[in-house]
Amino acid sequence: MSNRLVLATVFLVAILIGANFTMLKFALDHTTPMLLASLRTVVGGTFLVGFALMRGERIPRRRDDLGNIFVVSFSITTVSSALLVFGVNRVPAGVASLMSSTMPLFTAVLSALLLGAAVSRVAGVGLAVGLGGTAILASPSLSGETAAVGIISLAVSALAWAFGNVYMKWRDFSRVSAVMLVGVQLVMSAVVLVPFALLVEGTAETEWTVGLFAPLLYAAIPANAVTFALMATIVSRATPTQASATAYLIPAFGVFFGWLIRDEVLGAAEVIGGALVVAGVYVLVTSNARRAESIQTSASSVDSV
Image: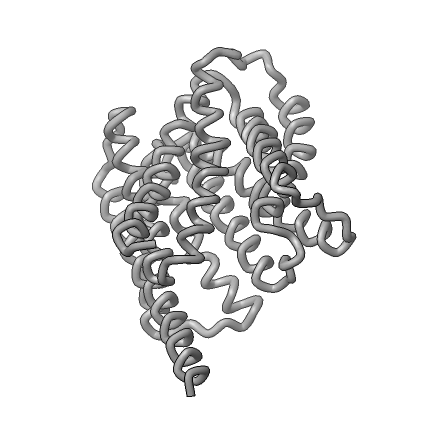
């Protein structure tokens, strides 16, 4: 894959995921948050597991594999996903995308605390800048109850996603393909979220129209399954620095689509805080990526001797 094609794929992934926050806002005009979160898992899980089975893969049956998948499913595609939709329902799409972009920051903190991962001086600066930006970004919303609940939900969503990422580094998932892994996670989440949503919210406020199904399908397939496949391609063929670019491009496109499609306007605190978050994530992920590239280069040099 040429360098230009890699960069084009990185931008495509960032665009698809960045637009997802705005698509979720449109879907929420026609349904409730928990029901939308549960429908995403049903559609996405069915699509990915079906695709994996068509490729001849088998559903994992080992108890330890299923246990590990359940932990990741509960943290990422259940808790994180549900709180993400709940938060998007209460704050602008652009703010939601910026808050969600704090996930790499929480991942760095949890990796250091739970796995003993080293944090370089440069990465530490990025982490401090990003967390400071998060505080500034959240500060205006905390004065209003509705927005405050949304901001807190999005922060916990990012934290839960980060925990799932760290857990995946800790446990062995090599026996399950990446496609099947995500598909089974979503199916497990559907088993939890669907009855919960029906019990807590019901379907009385849901309009079963194209206004719901169009953004729902976008959120479940292009913004989920397609981007997953593209990210797998990026990780396998791009440098760590190129692959990490999605982390700070996604919130930029999230803000852009919120402004372009839903006429959202960010205040000074959101602009300053969001810029610091993106800058902090950029410093953190590029520092870690360059370290990974340096290790790969050193290993290649040793192998060639």
